[in-house]
Image (cartoon, rainbow, N blue to C red; front, side, top):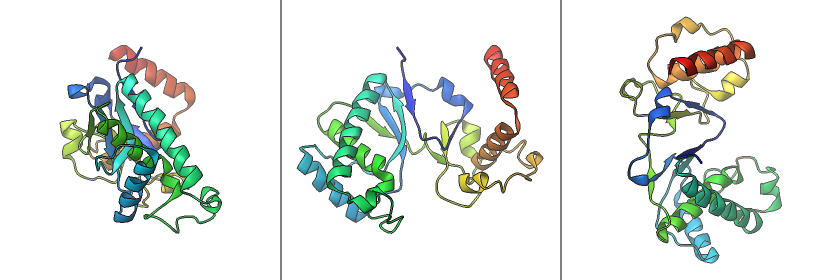
Length: 223
């Protein structure tokens, strides 16, 4: 059994000091999000009432979770329940089939169903005293566009998260191959989140599977 578990989206980078971080006060930690508007805040609170869920006005939780396996199970189970309810009763078929694109963003958007579902779940679980939560704005989901040095130097951030942007580092620009000619020397000694993301993405892209495996073994033996 693991002492702690991490749930992330796939567009993240993990900092090396994450391996030694232990949550304090047994809190369940989430990153920060930016999806809340006055409309969806009120709508989700009303939906919580319809579902028989408690609501304590927790807002803008990010999609990265870190905590005990039991807390993770509770949050995941209730989040899925919330997502299913929302998909069935709060979104029409054209929305579920992505036919509206981002027309309704940021007021009400099917693409962030996970975030809506977890907001319902976390408010309920905190409201009935099942978990303690910390929204870790200074711990999780630092932007990959962040060019401030202090977070990397102090080692207080645990992961980076790629949001929707064309600024470096951008997952969209990377996917289109527009960083392929980037000079890695420019980022070799960079201490910003931006430089770290660029370096990790390009080095992993250029390394073969054998090189990645050898690199991992070397790091494991030296730690």
